[in-house]
Image (tube, rainbow, N blue to C red; front, top):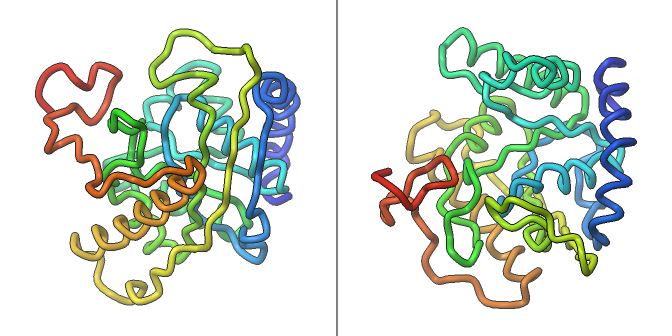
Length: 249
């Protein structure tokens, strides 16, 4: 397993704490682990239906011997205890200032070079789709992939929302639920690697990611996906926060 000694010890502590809880709450059906790159780090793009998704996806990657590194709001790194834990685990702060963005990119490249997995939710937040289908994506994952050269691996999962529904206040522990997770083929973005990082390029790469995820989620759910992807801006929903139906986007 790659990463610094400090990050490995931090993940070991978190895994030994959280894995027994996850195993108690959820049975798991995982497939497609052979599609994970083993000769390089990569960017993981999962669908996002509930707040406990990161634990489910991180659990899977850690069990495959891959260090999971999440993108997290820079402000969280200033919170006592939380910030020190995030830094120890080498989570990646999302900063908007030029100098901060450069540090973010440098850390991301280090993690990719070490063979780690960087988890970026391409939707940017929990899906606003009322039926929990993948919604219109944002371009952060596409930008990071094109800047680092890392492959993009879509991971779809379904079932965690039965344990903790979107923006719920309590867990639903009985009866025991099953979380199904599948790894997809890396998204082919080779034609965009040497092109300027324009809005059109970022939008096209993002759409490819979301299309791959939607097909995989439909297979897990065994039902057809909507013909039109949910767009919070068009629906006049806020892009952040649990009260996304209130107020203007």
